[in-house]
Image (cartoon, rainbow, N blue to C red):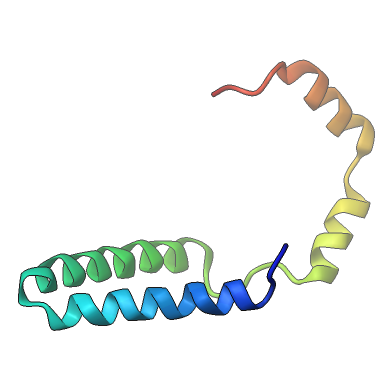
Length: 84
């Protein structure tokens, strides 16, 4: 990615600036708090469904190595084009 990591840091700073400005403006506070509340609900549902732990790199490698490649190839061949 070009301009890494400078562009990443600028994006983070812009997001923090925008959220801070919204928190300070009375006409934007309701929008900010509703958005933050919705984000908390979505994150909470994700954590409740999947937990905090993601798959480690070793677990992912073991899962890929243990997959039956012939079965996966059959599944791909019979599934057809992706549905949009």
